[in-house]
Amino acid sequence: MRKLLRIDVGAGTVTTQELPADLAAFGGRALTSSIIAREVPPTADALGPQNKIVFAPGLLAGTTAPNSSRLSVGCKSPLTGGIKEANSGGQAAQKLGRLGIAAVVVEGDPQGKKWVLKITGDGGTLEDGGAYWGKANYELAEALRAAYGDKVATVQCGLAGEYGYRNSSVAVTDPEGRPARHAGRGGVGAVMGARGLKAVVIDDAGAPRPALADPERFDKARKALTEGLKSHPVTGQAARTVTSSTARR
Image (tube, rainbow, N blue to C red):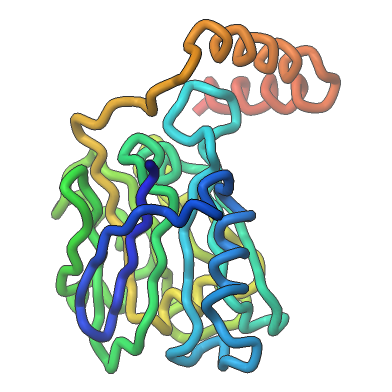
């Protein structure tokens, strides 16, 4: 059973729960939006203590399936006033998938506290993030890697999110540790900042890939999808462009 981590930034606690059975088939956007619809009042102030921010990988995160490393970020949007999902690439979703975490729900009134959430195979802990407040994304990523190791992935709130800008994003680090991937829609960074959460640090050291019910069928489907993406005139060209530009760096 996949797990749900519930983070109370007011109490400073992290609770691990089983994902409710009626949400077990959901991942990514379906899961973040369902949780926000259930738990955040429609009249809540998007930057107030009733709002929540949810991070959820897709159902295939942690596997070798192509395009399985997307992370969904959901909340009531301070920009539109409705339920919003923004998503990003990077390493965070894969690491959450390997840890068996379906979603991270951040809630509560931080009452001026500043946090970093560390997630490992043993669960989650809230740590004092005051020293990281005021850092821009690239400086922040370097500081977090220096403190937690260069194998972690981080999900970050930049300066715009701290300031409550309603167009701010949530940054996610890539394989080189750069905060170069962004969940950029709806002002999700402002909600992360309003919860007093500067960063989520994910360390999946020693975690296995998710168990597969039928590895042979999965691998066959994975190969077929990979070939389909390579041969498609749009996705195939995109893959060649990215590979070429990466090789030139």
